[in-house]
Amino acid sequence: MDKQLLFTPGPVNVAETLRTAICKEDICHRETDFDALLAGIEHKILSLFQIRKRERYRAVVITGSGTAANEAILSSVVGDGTVLILSNGEFGGRLHKTSVIHNKKTHLIEMPWGTAFDIPQIATYLSKHKIDVVAMVHHETCSGILNPLAKIGALVKASGALFVVDGVSSVGAEMIDMEACHIAFVSSSSSKALGSYPGLSFVVGRKKQFKRLKRHAAKTTYLNLATFYAFLKTHSQTPNTPAVPLFFALDQALTDILREGVLKRYARIKARADLLRNGMRRLNLDFLVDEADMCSVLTTVRIPASVSVHDLRARLRDHSIIIYEGKGCFAGKVFQVGNIGELSDDDIRYFLSTLKDVLLTLQADAADHVPSVRLKHARLDVMTMPVPAHVRVVS
Image (cartoon, rainbow, N blue to C red):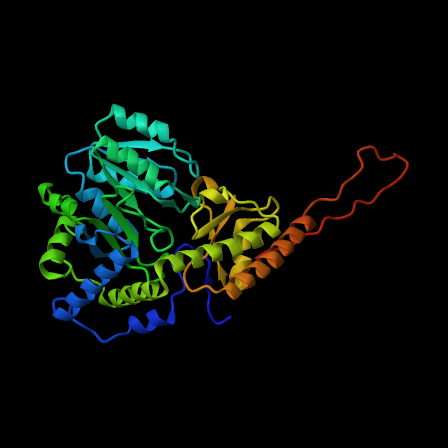
């Protein structure tokens, strides 16, 4: 093949329309050309979220990955208050690590990776502690589990706290109803389900919450949300030099999504996930998370006992297919297959066919390394010659 197929949760293969957009003519970020570009991006982001009372919301765009958007939120919205982090995976852990740096009063409810949150436990905790902000990852990429926004949002609202959500790998593929789920701020990234290049992130939030940020002393320079909001509101610009070509690409990605239709796009991504999962089930592969709890962008698959994840990735890479392997407690136990970006049904069928061939080859190789069985009680008067095991040198 003439390109790599990125079956990952990001970065992704981008559309040709974005390759054209990123090469547009140079403009200055302090001129009206950029003002109009940023205003258009904000309008399209709010349309993507299908916010009904959109006059109550704004969206700031940051040159930086999704982690930059999350750090901007956690360093800007808490002030001297108390924040509770809900974690059931790697990225919930990253939220906690980030919050501890900026907020002395950081609490944590932690579940094992890939385990659903205990809703009554969270309700009890909120009733017994004064919490000002609750932060949670929507799609926990390390396992593929999709955490419940509506249930936890209702608990947070009842407690009087603000609800902030890491939507880095779910925005653009899953419905996030900020109004119904009582979300004050949500973060996301350009390079995952939106299908654009990596390097930009954004924060969508209620206007009244953006306005309240100026009450808090700044804890960062570059990632201070109050500053981003002030520049957006006053100039339709960013406070620091933005990666302008990436803004052109993000604008095009959002245009393509809205032209297709948000709900149609969600359905198409889900159909791709179903095609992948059905095919992998036919290969007798097991999934880490129940399908009802999965996000539609990623499938986490248990590796067969006789197969090495490292070898599987290497063999697939030889066929121009890139997948993820598990991290942390899942290292060596699972592999992950994404289905976002410019992947066609034919690409998915090619992946499934190649995966089948590679697994069969690796399992056959593993069988070759099993020592021959020898009898425990051989007759003393019979000389038997052991059958040598096959030896394979792998460089």
